[in-house]
Length: 234
Image (cartoon, rainbow, N blue to C red; front, top):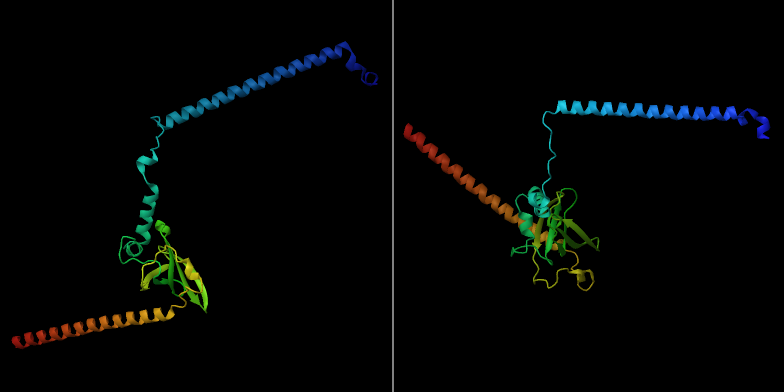
C-alpha cells in the first residue's frame, strides 16, 4: 500500500539522495558546534583579560579562623553581652545569685512591677536559672482563684522586682509545687503587700522630711552668715 502511494521513495536514486541529505545535515551540525565552541573560548579569554586588568595583584582567598581561637566559649560571651545590655548595674543578677546570702529564694513573697499593666505579687515557687533566660514562677490569687505567672528576670518589660517578705524557714525543695494543693496554699498575699508598701512609703516620707529639715537648716545658717557679713561691711 505504502509502496503504491509513494513509489519514488523506493527507487535506488531516492535512497541515495536521502543518504546524501543526512550526511550534509550532520556536517552542518558539526560546523555549528565548532563555531559555538570558538565563540565561547573567545568570550572566556576576554573575561579573563578584563579581570586581570582590573585587579593588578591576584587576591588570595582569606582563610577563616577556627571558631575555638576567635571565641572559645560563644555561649558565655553572648550571655555576658546580653546581661550588660539588660542589667548594666547587676542588681537583678545579685538578687538571684546563689552566692549572695540575701538573694531571693523559693518561698519568698515577691512583687513584680511591669512597664505595662498592674504589678503582680505572689509566692515564688520556682526559680529557673538559665543565664539571660532566668525566670521566676509566682503563685497568687486573683478574684479568689489561684494564678501562676512566669516572669523573665531580665526582660525589658519588667521594671523592678522587690522582696516583700522572706520565708520563715529555708525551703527543703527547689520547687514548691506542693503549694498548689489546698492544704499548703498560701492564698491571697494582698494584705502583706499592702503593709509592705505602707512601711516603704513611711520610710520614704521620713527620709524626705529629714532632707527637707537639713536643707532648711543649711539655708538658715547660710542666711545668718550673709547677714553678719553685711553688718561687718557697714
